Image (cartoon, rainbow, N blue to C red; front, side, top):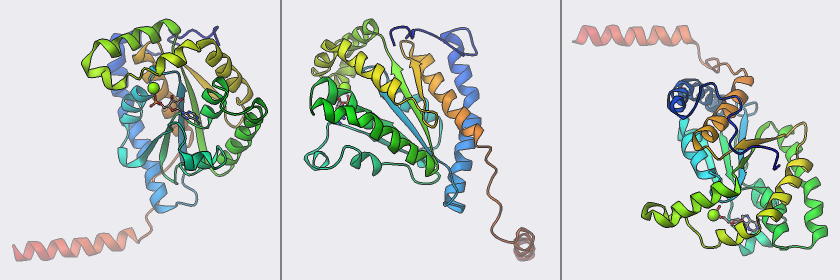
Length: 273
Ligand code: AMP
Ligand code: MG
């Protein structure tokens, strides 16, 4: 993973940051059009409507929230469901680790977003020895089977690892303690995770390798440049929605007959005027 450059700008159609806003603007119309088609399908043909799940993982400050604001924020909020997974509650801990995940899968026509996910159970859980090794070792295969099942159910999974560098994370943490408008994002516990950076990198490398399947591949998003990160995730979403080739749902009423009725109503209104 160290070989994947967090500052890369792979595929970006402009030159640098000053082109990012314009390029993002140009993505708005196609993204919201496609999202609305999915939503429309969810309403008219839920059995066959697409379900999309954008899954975001990354160390603190990698920009999971920023991606939600800037990339997911390009589409109608009514068609999205965002869920942040925190440390499990007592009730969640009493169940299998996939129990709380399953409950948040997107409904037909919806773009679901996971801010953290089932992967925490092979990341923070592994690094902090929250369960015995044999337990977390077994979870990679469980996750692969679970994701294959999601795909079989018609869910399009887009798994993104936001790859921020150790150096950039320090800058961002520093900003959080220096700017009063960012205090709320700072959690002293983030430094404990930072102190275990190599162990997290190793755990991420394993998750990315063992759970990079044909039906559910990982995308590694260079995340040291916020504008690139936001563009890259929006572009991935756009490409996945385009690939669905969705038409607008056909009318489930007689269009000509309804037009005639409206014509008659209009004529009546004009007579009365
Ligand atoms: P944040 O996303 O920064 O608001 O923090 C959420 C915290 O919940 C992070 O420190 C995660 O590591 C932690 N977390 C999420 N899922 C799990 C899990 N399955 N087990 C333990 N901690 C978790
Ligand atoms: Mg945090």
